[in-house]
Length: 87
Image (tube, rainbow, N blue to C red; front, top):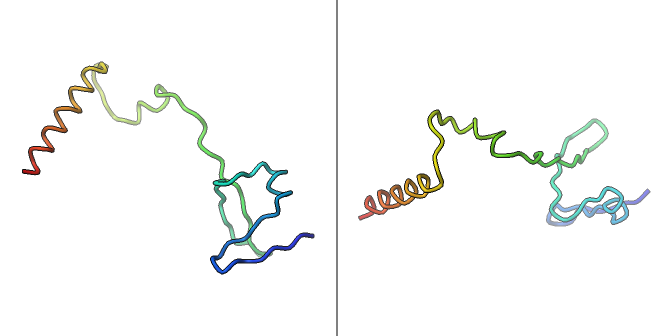
């Protein structure tokens, strides 16, 4: 059994053999759960990759498809409108 200590900053170092076996790298996110026996660390799985077609319906737009030029013009118009409010 390997032991580790809690640092003054509240950090715990996981043994490198465990990190390598689990392929946990710096920045890996964990869910922390309190259990009857102690604390359980569970890696949080990232969202599955998605395409625009899969998520575009969440935007709520109901109308004809817009071109990139239409979207660029709308962004410029909104930027001008907001810049005019600051004066």
